[in-house]
Image 1 (tube, rainbow, N blue to C red):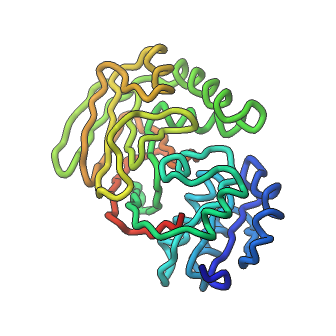
Image 2: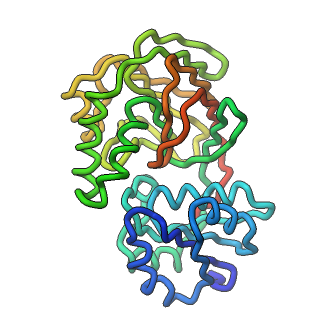
Length: 285
């Protein structure tokens, strides 16, 4: 690979701080380096960079920022990942090593794979991109709590505590879901997951037949959810009563308005329109 056209992007404000700890190992490879001043700065730095391959040094949150920078860039860029974060959902799905030295070797010897990316648009017109999943309702509250406690309790335990807390605190809501133009109404919902891969959040996943480049989304609507059903999601089991749909685009309206989350970080409340952009990003791994 051409090292002079490859740039490492580190967000020092990421929650785990693993990127800073692994930085000396990664920088020995001789790539270019960018240390951002925060999340928005990282997106801008990636978008304006002249590199051909943008390497995310971080977990799902940092990967998402780099993807958003690539999608906003005027010039094509490949994505690669040197995992150094709290949540490895993107790496799990795309078979990227989470061990620093092995990940570096994978980058140095990797090949390109064209994958799908999801575009999400809010009612106010703001548009972002994600690669793993968007969660509405229960999942957004899990993300909000887990991001505060995982650095103290670890990925699994922190997310489990957050899931139990959200199970008690998040109330059912009504939802209208429009899948490829066909509208379905749900008077009582606990959670809606829009999946590009099967992982919802650290350790939580639903065993849907997701593929990285099939141009499809899997939408899982949970009208009800027992505590046992919640815990079984750690085994990938789809809870009883859940409805699973496959589509290329989906619009979700909720009453009362629910918060959203994608790729591990809480997002604003509001209706969302999500479309799968087929084979829109090159991933070097």
